[in-house]
Length: 254
Image 1 (tube, rainbow, N blue to C red):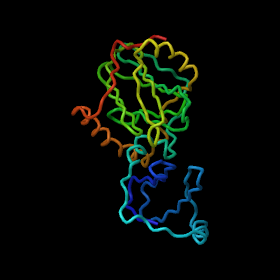
Image 2 (image 1 turned 90 degrees about the vertical axis):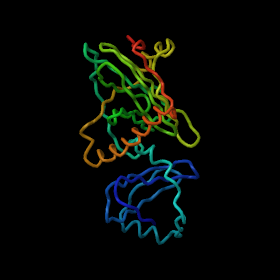
Image 3 (image 1 turned 45 degrees about the vertical axis):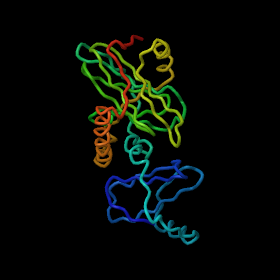
Image 4 (image 1 turned 90 degrees about the horizontal axis):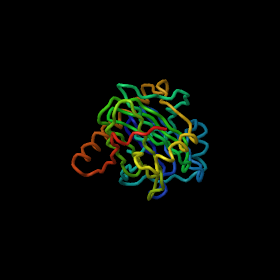
């Protein structure tokens, strides 16, 4: 058992440094919450008080650590809201088209590796969308410079310069890191990547951000990630974090 301040809060279950499961406990002041984890199913869920008390009588109480360890998953769970069970995307059939005042940027995650790990994609203003394996989404932006961010294990930042009337693509890749998935945002700029784009899109489902799923509680959680992005921009400007470039000349015609 432990006591914590109310607010945006995620309970993280780890084995060593390996994350097993996450559970959001946002804005629950004055409540006693009972969580149950059934190892090794890599899941955690809330149970009613009477059920929890019945369980507790069968278990041995363990003391908490004298000094809490740093929450190494704090940033990852804020930047990737899907890992705490928030479903913020919905299918759509409406393909966006560029016009004389806008470019279209498509984020595509073609691989099925760790398919259910839901990767959040952000700009300076907030969440643009999330991607599970074999899905993609599009955004409409004015011409000029734009920044995009992803975070799991390490930050991945794209510094983009786009022109109106054109289509641009960013591949969202996930590989196995030291203790968790490692996300990379990869501007589609090489001929090899561009040749694969049609195949990637055909094998993936088009999604869009479900604004109706973002209530006040979810908005508070998303807003809590914005200072992390501001700090990352500062790190980029100070040369502490690298970026990948998407140039105006990287436009693609499918």
